[in-house]
Image (tube, rainbow, N blue to C red; front, side, top):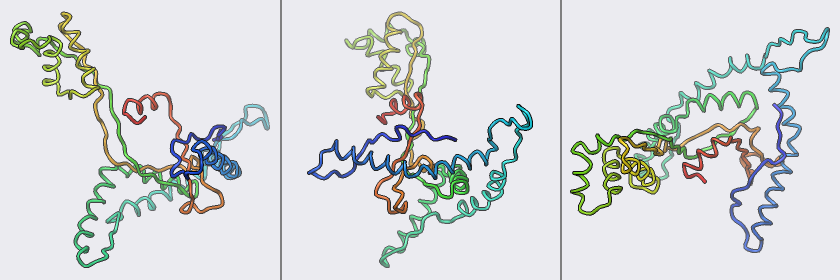
Length: 279
């Protein structure tokens, strides 16, 4: 698994900038520090590439004793990790509670013990961490160390529905428009669609309603309603492979004054995050 880091980071936030430093210069210094730390890690990255090939049985095509000779290998590392992973994973999943709160005062005793079940429920149910814990244990066994990251998971999904004029106006559209009291036909149709299909009159919802209403107003029996529906809106917790994390090599991770996390996203993922309002 070769690592190409010709342009390893894009700095989106600098943190606290001293008043006597220009922001451009502060960003330039931070980027240079990250690049230097990544260059100092080249030996570790080379070792991880060799371990990856060993774990998954990847090797160059053999030419001895003849070209095209058998290239079968038995990846011993993966076999060992599969045997080691279940007991370590169970130690984490069996922890009860996942967070312990120590009261500082006598009056804090009951609140501290009351909140513990809530954090256990949130960590396991709301944050859906079971699969991530398995990934974390696997990465820990493979890399020797790993990172976890808390955040917020927000995701929408494009939903397309067919709106029927007959369903919206069972008494006839002309009769409904006659009783509208001077409201424009588009507005009347939009109100019916929003009410029957539970579409909020937000900025995005208004555009989708207007498009479907215009199709029906032009005489079509059906209109197409395309909306962005909220699928996930919850706290999240993820395992981060250390091969995608750059930290100062002369500092312990818990004492590092910067972390650079490399995100690899395709065009579809970037578009999804733009629609969700991340950018």
